[in-house]
Image 1 (tube, one colour):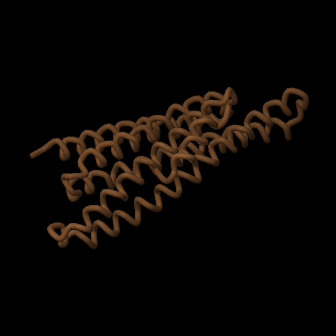
Image 2 (cartoon, rainbow, N blue to C red):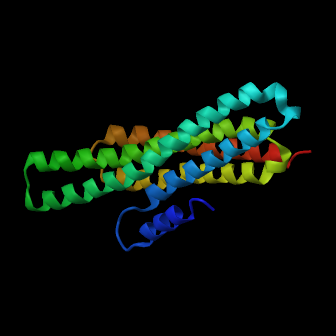
Image 3 (cartoon, helix red, strand yellow):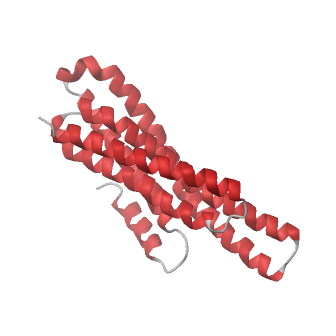
Length: 204
């Protein structure tokens, strides 16, 4: 396994008794791994002549999934950075009661909400593309497709948990309401897409 060392380092970082990296980073990484597996399935399927009529479509899906994978990897790093900023500004606010310090803290909370929000959106897009991968993908890679789907769903659900935690510290009720409604809609959509794609894999 070429990347075992990097994965070991990542898991060790997650194991540290520090606030970050944490669940938000893990959620983005799960979404990225899900996209990666689906990229692999597209590539394997394109190598088979019996799927030749779908090669171009699979290439397009593969490229889009690769872009989502890369975006989610960036978000994994940004999640830890944004949470660290929340901790830093919250500490500063305790010793500095100024409006400027309060604003900096609010901005940090907003960014720490927006990062997992983007993670949820990207992971949901992976799930949307997964439906077609389930339809077109090689049957010999069914388990890979299935694991990719499950990981993408974790990306959505895990990010949602982090969004909810951060929303508790937001001072903007309109923002809290809008993001909360979006969260519910995305959760329902994720469940629907996962069921749809898995039922395709389990079919004849």
